[in-house]
Amino acid sequence: MAKSLSYFPLPNFGVNGLNTQDNPATLDATFLTNANNIVLRESGRISLRKGLKQKVVPSDTAIGSLIEHNDQGTNKIFASHGTSIYTIDFTSPNAAFPSSGADVKHTVSGSTSDWQFVNFNDRLHCFHSGVVPQRYDGSLGSGSKWSAHATDPATISTLFDPSCAMGFYGRIWAGGVTESKDVVYWSNLLDGDDWTGGDSGLIDLSKFWDNDEVVALAPFYGKLVIFGKNNIVIYNSPETVGSLAIDEIIRGVGCVSRDSVQAIGDDLVFLSATGLRSLARTTEKDKLPLTDLSVNIKDTLTRNIGNSTNVKSVYVENEGIYIMSFVDNNINYVFDFKHITPNGVPRITTWTFSNDREPSNMAYTELYGLLVGQQDGSLAGYEGYNDVDLAWDSGASYSSSSYTSDVSSPWISLGQSVSAVLLKRIIMVLEGGSGATLGLKWYKDFGATPSTTTNIDLRPTTTGSTALWGSSSSLYDSSKFTPIYGLQEYRTPLTGSAKHIKLSISVASNGYDASIQDLTLLTKEGKIR
Image (cartoon, rainbow, N blue to C red; front, top):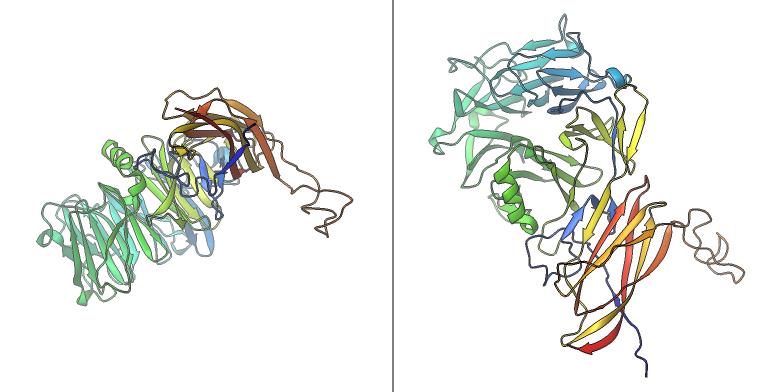
């Protein structure tokens, strides 16, 4: 008697994102062991990431810093590369970085592009290690729109060159001065350019931590958070500097990268030496518990940090994702805060780019949404489903390049402890991807050699109505069947027998989104082995 087919559905395939930390032989199929160039939609479906479309011709020098500044009602984009800060002209893609003009190009001797830009009191303030702070007055100023800061704190004997700052609680706070790396300075009230006299002042942290230095500053729940490399100090009452008082000192955990710090809802996220962490306040506790957000990739991420701490980040509010880029290594992690995994952390995926398109800096803007400064010196928007380059010789000549998304499952037990099953078929329901090619291969019983790749051309229905059955206004009509727009079922044979199987799926983008909706394996009972 012929044995019947068994259906092995894979509900919520990959819904919890990347996990390189746990044993892939015991992980369930809601996790992935490879999750490159994808995002996870609110429904949990695996989809292609959007592309990076260049908006200006590359300058051939990486964009080091990027910000949107409101200049008396007009939003402007500022970007830095080399020793200059530019006001970007997106209407002239072939000449977006002006070669001259004090109002649109500000050159600072001794600087690199690694500025921290701070919007404060209608001005743009710029901070850079080893360089005096710079200020852009824009429409507020008369004469030159750019100037160096006016006064130094009285305690500075050489150079006031803070590497990090924030504008909050009515003044600018700055730290990381070469002469005094364990001191935080605050400016006069509503005057981010005056650091002496009045109610300006300083916090000497040498009394509270040993041989540490200020890396980053951030506001948090009406408090001032000072990140050192190995410690965190939190102050109460920064809005009333005469009442400043220590709330908490967190020892042994610090921040390794100034530009990893991002406010996400009611949380503050930063990169420590052992992973991405959250400084989360709860209503049940007076203190600030630390949460490790990267436990699913902890060892891998720690190795990345050991290789480089040149990290840039951005929180994309409309997508609910925190992007962290290891600039020197083209390693980009995406933490999805829309969905929390069973172990209480965000879902994680990775992005990679070719041809120097990878981020060198990022900013979330009102004008363009996510804006990416690239290693090749261009500025790109997060849009479409190809990576799009703007040609050097023309401000209107574009070339599109596909990218490949890759996902791999952990080892999936096929439910048999003593007998293998015969692999018969996989049924995949996908949405979109018109004209793209999907590659499928599989591994058996912990083997390192995959099957031959099966290529499937994606040809979803692209015309007709979205009715399930009958006319567009009726679900039932015996006269005709109408498929769901954009969805397509693909069936492809599997070969061999196995107790465990690992799936690897890749999709080459073709300008259209594609997402995996459902996966089911068909098997037959096999021999005992």
